[in-house]
Image (cartoon, rainbow, N blue to C red; front, side):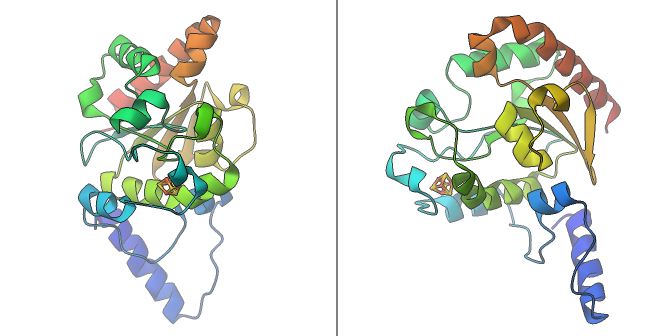
Length: 224
Ligand code: SF4
């Protein structure tokens, strides 16, 4: 367990001994990461073992592969999309189709290597026909994402697309109001941008996405 989670756990146990039952946590952070006392998984392999064969939501019925994520086990930047698509479902890897190629180009444009970034999605199984995941499916799958964040311990999260942004930030605000600035969720900085699949359909938004990427690069270089 890293220092942050160890410290948080000890502090919560201390408050519990004092009889404190609830905490005035920020709504978005509490909803997304949840202040629970469960220990962080040892590593990503432990999460992979837990998720194997998962049937927590109906998406298990139509998936080919669970797409847990890909990248270093500890890194300062984590990218979070919404759900695997067709190619990802077939290969069991995130962002490998046309959208994946565009994501590679986006990272290259700001001189960040894909190999240095952990990439995952809010839900780990493909919704049929690439529809948006339902709120119940997101809720069922979020514990895995929370555990990934505990293990990887990123400093920065970049959300790709509306669903990832709204889930991570615990908001219903439109993407146009969420992008273009840095959100602070306790120790995490969050930058919001468009999903590459959306940019393939609506390339006029690439200019705005590039502004987001420049902002991401700025804090990426600042954060040690
Ligand atoms: S989407 Fe998540 S919760 Fe649903 S079956 Fe897949 S791994 Fe389990």
